[in-house]
Image (cartoon, rainbow, N blue to C red):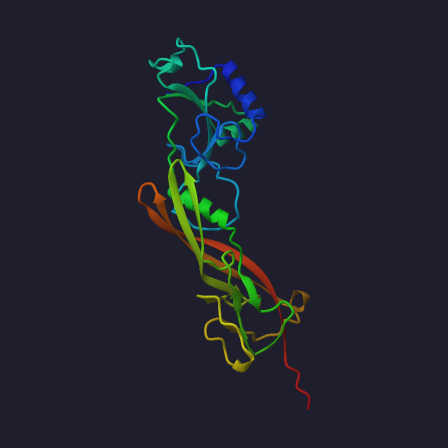
Length: 296
């Protein structure tokens, strides 16, 4: 049952929130969460029932990963058992008695942001037989696991920053591979007894070559060039510049290599569920392209 808190309780809640330190195992109730800005209130990363939007969880690397279409962002809320508990005569007990469960208060980040604009914060006060349950979103846990991987853009080996390339000659493009730049990379995240394990690997790299032409999409790391290959084209990831870069900014074409990471996840502890989504990371490069000067 939701009620407005008395003014004295509201002031106490505000005071605790302002002076609280980092969350610890001794906080009550301990219902999980791993969000930036945690306090004495136990932080819960989830979408509150009945809401269509909220403040997304903070932290981790930025990405443009795609999840379920239309899925609302999780809202960050804090829950605390009131101490001291209201007297038995308080209607907030809603027919229950002290000792038979407890009264909790929940405040959400969206409420705090609203208060900054002058709106009144109305925490939710409710009775619960035990620590309130957490609605665990396994895909959100999978994204938290990806944050732990510290994925980056491609580690570009070619084109080289100090290289000089020639108009009309095949260029071989490839990247060095590591768990953070190409994968595979595996990590897990746990909340409220549910564990999700995610594995990420680059499925393609889109090379925008900086000369205005369409990007080249390579479905792998590319093949390293060997001098014995002569003027042959790369078998899987190459490009041929048709113009010199002399008129470009700094005398070089400035391009980007955009890696699409495919993330497969599954619940390894909890209700059976699995899924897939993509994450995108990008690296920049510059190419010095010249025309061959022929002397008679």
